[in-house]
Length: 228
Ligand code: DX5
Ligand code: ZN
Image (tube, rainbow, N blue to C red; front, side):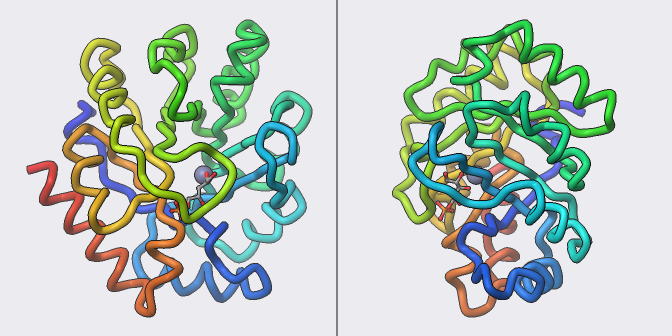
């Protein structure tokens, strides 16, 4: 599949959901047309925030009907990757900032994840050069371009990151999924789609809407319109 043909997916970020009612929140966005469910895992070290671990992901997996897209914002993905695979992650993304410190180990982890049937991803913060991802590209099914600095929901979209998607789709000729995360909403999804993004994480925009299904449909419509 070429980049332009990669299918559009809307992935609501559960970080913006009501954590006391996660099963209902999941059902609501699944009924509303969500393609993937984005789960933000933070360790209080790689980012200054703490969220959920493998036990919660396993519980989510029991109620979810859509694939769990797990974004690891943690310093030691090697220690926890197997637990997230067992918990039912369909997509597992680690950060370039940690992979770069142990490139050989990162490549072997990615290979091992693929062998386990998991879709591999690598995320990078707005201050990271996209070319840093090159040594890992052959092992990646997905590249997650952060459009805010990882750590918190509800931040403002940084349009300067769109240029990286052009490099990824052009110079680096990446044909897999390109995901964007942070500040995606009705005004920013179009430019992201036009740049070559096909998987859109949206926390505040989806869970903050009174009608989540209508919001997901509108986001999708704008992404489709921007690509054609
Ligand atoms: C930020 C997380 C995002 C966050 C996005 O560190 O990776 O997934 O939930 O939230 P919004 O869509 O509100 O910017
Ligand atoms: Zn995320």
